[in-house]
Length: 186
Image (cartoon, rainbow, N blue to C red; front, side):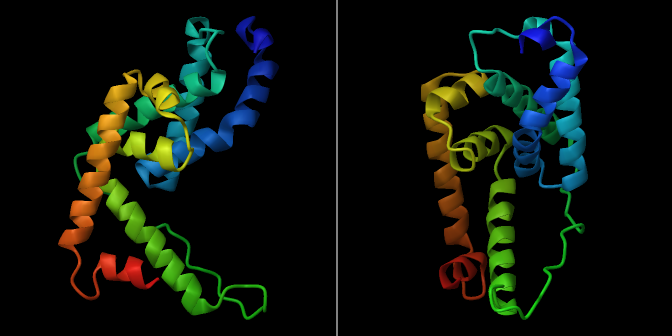
């Protein structure tokens, strides 16, 4: 990190290599679209590089970097004018090997994942960021508050409200054949 702060581009390239998966995963969970997540991850690293002088070495670099990524994704989500549906999701590869899941299990798992992602996508960007950071990355309330530049109590409140909204949406869809039935039967 010190070398990167002194302008060593190779040192910064090492930081990119180290944190690229974490940044991309956060962007993908927030944006739900692969190419947009790739673009957002690249823009995150560019912003980080251009603003290295603003980095506070007393903070975790990963926290600072994910803060840039989550804020960038929130801005992108706010700029969206329409709901994007991903048609790029890969078709599951069905094989008959004994160590592979059965085709039906693969399809049910994919449907469950899509249903959960659809529910998360229905949240506002601020709530979505808190949910992703808490339940995918398992960050503490304090770490999430640092990343999203807010208070710990605000994060607890966002997570409570987000869980309530998700529960309400699941209850609304509780008819047979709905997302709830899919999740319960899977």
